[in-house]
Length: 294
Image 1 (cartoon, one colour):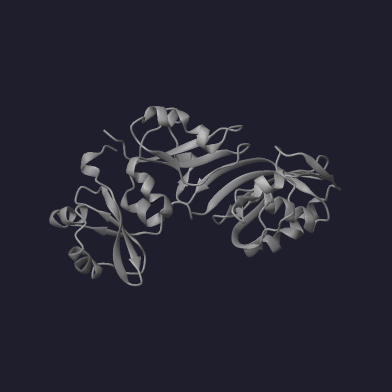
Image 2 (cartoon, rainbow, N blue to C red; image 1 turned 180 degrees about the horizontal axis):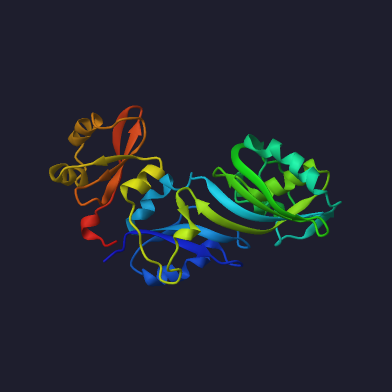
């Protein structure tokens, strides 16, 4: 029987996000398993792993904001902006006041040019592949939001700084290190990175790190994901599970806003998603939880 739910997983360093899930795939061999948002191989921290038909809910996870603990090494630049790359520059080590005074320009809605070594595609190829080949190309700046950027500790003798960063999805912490260093007249790279939170999910919620327990989305979690909660009667639940379009007009009156809806049955289990498209409800993923286990 296929498993169904999500797992909060603390990824170790020196392994890709895909490879890190090997133990989870072994635990649930009959279920599709994927994560919503990767971490670089050198990085550690939170991955939200979607199991079974929960993998169809990935679009409602990938845009969540993130919180990181990051170490920046000022005075040394690398081509990848992280410890995996080759050193390509040396610069001065800024004083603490110079770093602090530069931070305000990187908080709020800003434009960020992604790293050349990234998974973004340029003319049908990964930017990282083009960079490895020594190709000349330009990445366009993209809008991101940095909600908080805090310098927590700084050793001026070594140039090592510790930051807490709360940012929108799509933010490259490596690019933040590059740009903050440039604002201080030097170079830097991210020497360590740990993701501690994704939207409403945090590392603190992992109490059995080696057992990979499955969790179900409840109404509170659905709200935290930006979904409106809709509860169905037993008869409506049956119609919803069978994809009856006539039900949508009836439910339209129950939808309060313009958000997508998380649909729950009388058993408080998530039955699926209704997309709110131009003030019209359409079926999103329908989870047949009656035939699957949490």
